[in-house]
Image 1 (cartoon, rainbow, N blue to C red):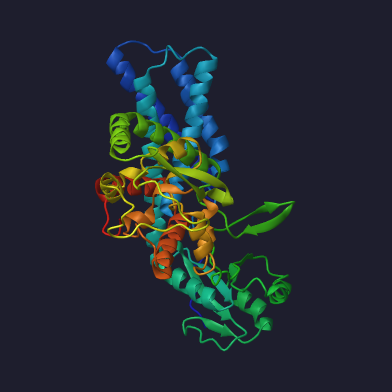
Image 2: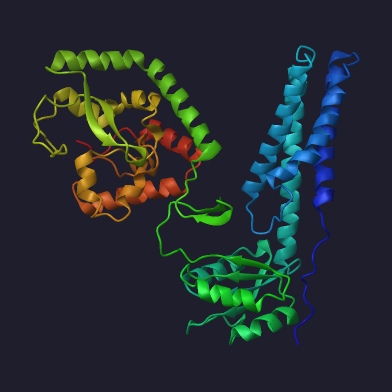
Length: 467
């Protein structure tokens, strides 16, 4: 006989959490009012209290839209904190809008607004840090466990088993496993001999979830599993085994009224993509203004040093296969290449001018590409754009090569700060660069961009493989 399970559900805390969040917002606002009143030694306008109570009400009404009260089980603390901050920022922005529409902005103290915003944000995030830590410790000790049956034990099934045991704070306990293969299953979980055992096992062991870790092609088996579960009111998750397929990202959404799995979704999309776009344009404009004297000096030296234009342009492949002209400072003597042939610069290349060698070694020849960023053809950070001829050369030799064109090419990138710069004269070198590029696309974040920019500014302008 099994020992009594420690799986009882915690009380429904959704309403309690909403009221707690509203109380935090109100307390931070009223405390800020008291702070301001003490500083000014005068009675404050009623608009302050009105905004505090309005935001408290909006907190109760709007915070659920940010999924703040959905189950935290299996979700990252960073995600929860980010959602709380985004929700509070939205509510606070509504308060600012109300004060503007009621012509009260001149009355309201900016200091009070800043103290309130920061205080409430710290309170909302701090409560989640504390509760998240308490729940994790409880689940580490076997409390509030959610018992699971795993259907399928291929590569994905193994990975889910490992993740469930490594993330013990999530509170998932895999009690049983069903697989129609000869795969060895862990001794800690009961192996079900057939699907007929599924429903009785669920009832006997108080199972609350079934995870179906089968391939997309196993639709018939998935249907059989669902048939056997038709009398059991439990949660069922189908986690398609797509680990053998190289994906940029994935999400589940609704398409024409039916659920659809997007297999190549991008992290830098939607609002986050718009934020990256705005940052790129602003950053590029600032760089061009700040470095204008340097750019003019380089242009003058190029003009005095050799015959030909200051800028070199070449067709490159941009986002989603769109061709654009990339700008660089000319670093070679003017020469004519055969049609369809692009020869990469090599060590002691006679075509490279003396100034050009310095510009290429320090990557100063790339600075005009901030014009491409302003035009919306490139990003500050992203996979480096290659010549069209090189795309034709490597797209079949390097698996997933063309997936790097799902995002805008960049002036610098994850590959460049990790040493994959300069000449790519072998398939091996190009394969390494593509792996870095795909890692960046799959794991993009705004902080990652800032990190790449900072590292490029400090040490990313030189390289031993740059000629």
